[in-house]
Image 1 (tube, helix red, strand yellow):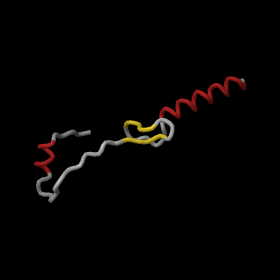
Image 2 (tube, one colour):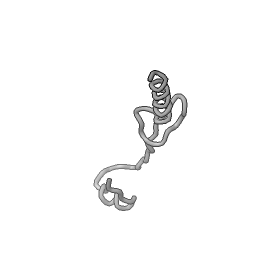
Image 3 (cartoon, helix red, strand yellow):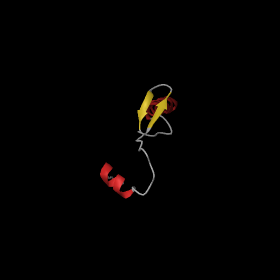
Amino acid sequence: MKTINDNQYLKENEHLRTKCIVYMPMFSICSVHGYLNGEHEYCPKCDNTLIKLDEKILKSIN
């Protein structure tokens, strides 16, 4: 991923008629754990809990 600083961005996009630039951080919200850094389709914390529960169930069956 290419990263550029603000001055480079403004220079490359000076032909656009933009009045402001808005930076929006990516985050996700889990109903149990709240805000999560980054974009997630599923909560990684909840997934880990479910995986551990599944492993316990499989061990008890065998």
